Length: 52
Image 1 (cartoon, rainbow, N blue to C red):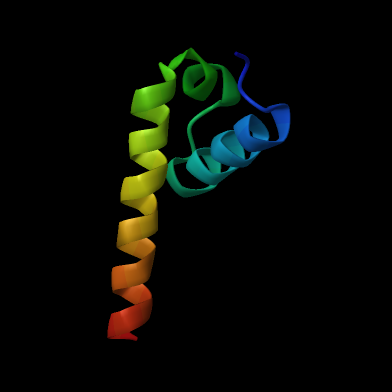
Image 2 (cartoon, one colour; image 1 turned 45 degrees about the vertical axis):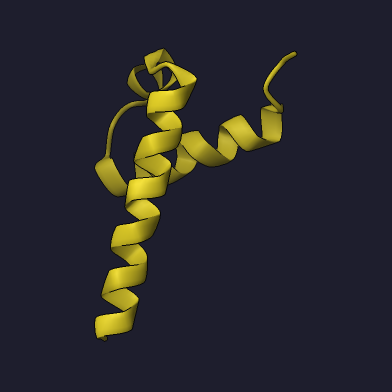
């Protein structure tokens, strides 16, 4: 099974926006690790928005 291209672009853009990592570094991450970064960034963003 292949990973949906649109979802991959969303994940890469999300991580790149928040961490300022280059695309090749993000694409080199294994999917579960990249997904974990996406989840953690989401938690941080939710916490910030709840505090504001």
